[in-house]
Length: 68
Image 1 (cartoon, rainbow, N blue to C red):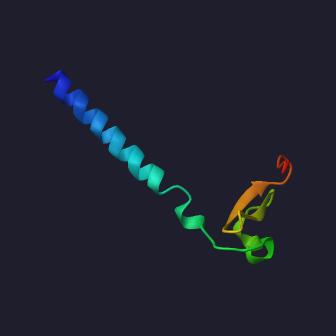
Image 2: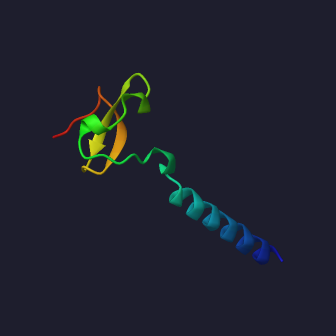
């Protein structure tokens, strides 16, 4: 009986992780081709917005960002 409960718990955890992994950054995928295409209001104060790989906008920390 304990093994069955353990298997069910493991299955629930894997299903939960699958759903979390598929929804990462789902609400913040704005298409762009250059930095000017990204809305400045997308990020909060210490963060800046940048067009990554000429495909989507992302927020980054200007103080710790190192492009090299």
